[in-house]
Length: 464
Image 1 (cartoon, helix red, strand yellow):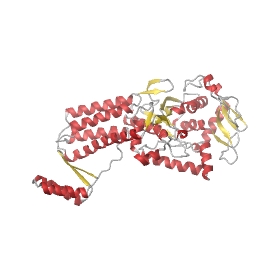
Image 2 (tube, rainbow, N blue to C red):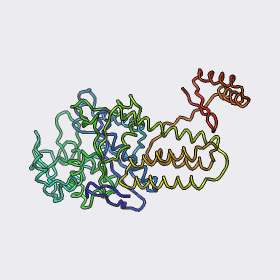
Image 3 (tube, one colour):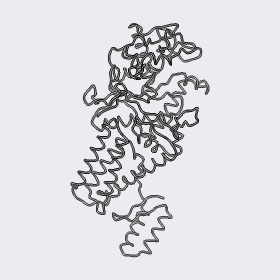
Image 4 (cartoon, one colour):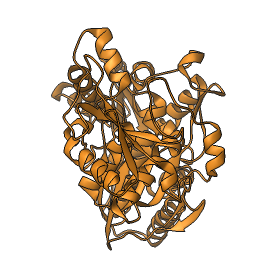
């Protein structure tokens, strides 16, 4: 497998630190509101990455944090007249509601910043001891010029980074490029005890602490949105490598942005949508489909028409899967045919080749629809063979559901005895060429909300 590594700006062969094991840190949400469709993209991307690596036989440890203390959380809690903890816990619960709706599996660990204060203080203390950080009036700052490789992830020279740097009101750092590791407590704000006085951690140090605790000083893959490259991930590298003296993360993956009707999504433009908003209109699965339908590094455009296209594509997948269920009930005994076995092997190899090429879910979806076409042509025949149907169903479920996380809302319908009896009676009437009786029963079932479809393989039905 090759991964486009932001650090090297090229596709690098993926070789994990430990054979058959992969450790991943994916930046999670700041929990002060429902997460938006832009947040949802990396959640879905790294869910697919984890699923695919497991499909290929790796043991994966995925850490996705919750930032449960920062200025936005404090401000919103004050607006609502509740504590920061009440607010953050509320939106952590809401995260899991939306994540479940999107079929995002829980990470191996979901640490919270506030539960890792001791680890954070330990890293900051080490950085001060080594001369990479300094305390001033209760704040602690990292000195970026002490780290010669600062800027290696964003690939920007220090003088260019300096041109956009500034010292905010209330900051007393020595250099505009320095960033806060610890913030002195302000009146009526939550705080924790530290060697530098009461305060709370800066944003960047949280992820360095949580990744080290759960994954070690060096791990395989770190990821998030492109907006995190600088300063967040750049700062993580600086403080982690200066503290630990080893490489922080070996591969860096960053997904592209989401546009709305061709424009960048932003609250100021009024085109900002939470996943909950969109799911209330279209359901969750079309959102997931949209977010993995393009290569993860490419921008995605969100619009009404595109979501409708996603729904139509999903329906093709569901129709195929339902066809396999129906064929299994009516299939005849027999061994898998050579042409079907070869077709399934070819499609599986093509799918894996696409995913091995920097997690190319767009091409992988293309292969999945080629598989659907082949199943319809070679497996769902007038006289389906059980072995063919079983093998095709297994591969479809592996690629569509196990790896891509789609087709997860299938409802295995059952009929009550009365309806089963009516369908059987209609089948008998057709067998006796009693077309009037067959039509009468069909119309009666339609009134009951059961739609029948006569096919070469037998009768299919669905609810109206």
